[in-house]
Image 1: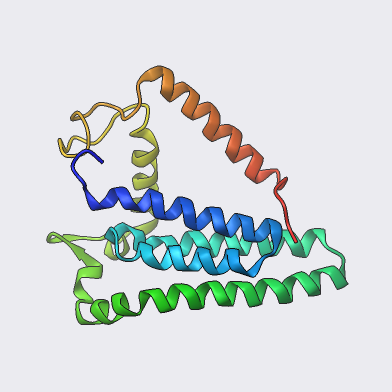
Image 2: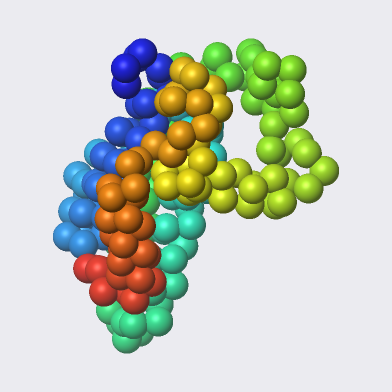
Length: 188
């Protein structure tokens, strides 16, 4: 980040946490799940928006759980389920240990979770799903169409990527989304 803005840590933390999670799914090694939990726990010390990341982790784990349930026979599923529960438990334990100081501080400042600079958060608005959808659309659109108008983040209103790079970004994003939805990734 040009200005050392703390939000820049979120992509770094999520990249490494998901890397170790996917590697854990693929190789089944307990150490990968512990590393994923450790890195994910560190993310709580970065930017407040990171607090939504447990929902992303839970969605990925649920998706993988349903994948192994559908594609494994009964005995293999029982083994994979038992191993996955153990490893996810260790991942959550590692994240929890790292997050203990954050949790103590958070308990003392709980009102900051629901408000930000005097504005209501997405979770406390009357239509949270609509607000979340708008936020996702704006976030994806900032790469190619219209960026943030805050001068701290980029040239006001300019997309983050130049148009040639933006085209390749969209091709790669769509390709990876199709790949992820086609369930061709590794498993136990």
